[in-house]
Image 1 (cartoon, helix red, strand yellow):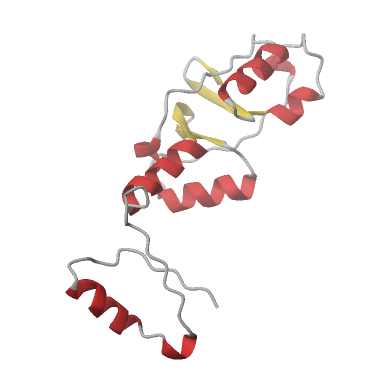
Image 2 (image 1 turned 90 degrees about the vertical axis):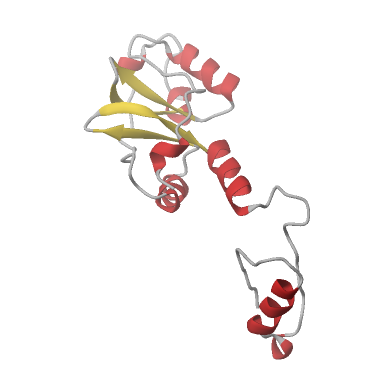
Length: 158
């Protein structure tokens, strides 16, 4: 799965002539802390709500610092998650050669993992709590497969 497959067009774009108060209102309405600043389909940067709260509410976004955080449309979904976590952002613009293609938000990532993993399906998660001494993945796998099911993901804690 690549970034371009998770694009959402549900989020509004910000423009340099928009006011700080308008940007804050949009972020509140869409329940996000970041929105892209775009001029004629060209990505100019990511606007952060925390930065806006320090500005005059009547100032225009052309006067506000932006953050050059974005990804290429061909990167893997795991890299998208890693970059969003590292940058502590809830919206990640997808840009190719400076042209804005869309955004990926946390909700689209969560929906992707829930659907692709089967987590959203009834009976799709089974939790086994067994002592480490009795643990054998091959035995567990054999039992599961003999009963017409399959293991698609596996996590283990110590």
